[in-house]
Length: 495
Image (tube, rainbow, N blue to C red):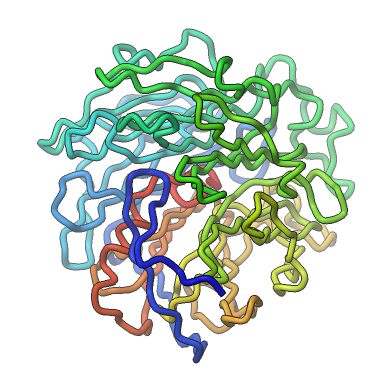
């Protein structure tokens, strides 16, 4: 076995400390939902509650941990949505929220002063310091127009989308996003997923089409709808960006139903690559060619399809070195009646689908979203945490084996290449049922273990405080690395 490096670059200018693996593998943590006590009481608003007519209503918005005020304590940013057909006043309109960490287990809603209050279909979030001024900025994807918020360093943000060159007149459905320095010039570039080129006037309604799930009429899509084109923006180093998608080869993959994206160095050549989770089509692995271009090697590398060669309905992404061999592995969440996939990095540019040998192919009765490799119990071996919730509320009340609200799933890493499903052992924070979408990971209370923030569709969020993990001295940088690195599988559209 290769020696795991003490420090690892996460692909977004964040240094992450590695813990020393502990072979005892006793998972004795409990997760408690402390959101209400912490002051996170604003509900997410996203489309219809009991039924949804259009695919936009099924996807959900994003969450992120970020230290926007540089005080060493993780704050929270959450985007929001609306309901079709409702009329809002400025006072009643749902908005995104920024919560300041009060350093005592509670948060204060500082949205009004921050300048971040927006109403609309906000989807993904990625956090990164694009102008190298030492303050974390926010890029927010939407159905409509994406927004770049510049952190002014005084507790406020400014919408600089137009002056940064990121505004488009056309309506697009941005989903996942990730910051990366693809040309290694010292400035963060930006990759954005676009899901469906959505025009509601051209989408058939449930009951007036063949769109069904197990005989129940549901909203249509994504199949049958035009896919979106992914975008790569180059940071010009002066506060502006240029859409360079064509020359680097991003457009060669064509229109896809892209949902989440992450940027990591998968082949250890010191250049950031990009992996994209795609709904109902082949996933994408853009390998960085060191000359400003990328090549999609997903099929050749073995991470585009399932082991039996099927395209899956991929949603959430987690990246981590689960076997501590020095190479990043990939976990992908998928739809009900399908397995999530674990791809082991072979260290030679290829991956092996180890879903069943590793023991993570057990749960096929949930629709699965945001995910992360997190070391729940601080034993040095990354565990897997992901959230679930059906896309169709209409499945409730039908005896078809599908449930709209469902629990979270946790696989404990046994340190021998396999995992054990311990979801039922980790307390009410894991067992409680919601229609969840995005999730984020970080140590919000600075007690030395990883906590979890979960976005629940049409419900308040969950803040799962980790109780019982062994404290590891010096692990603070590892926790911050997970918290602020801009990976949408953890921070937003679940990714």
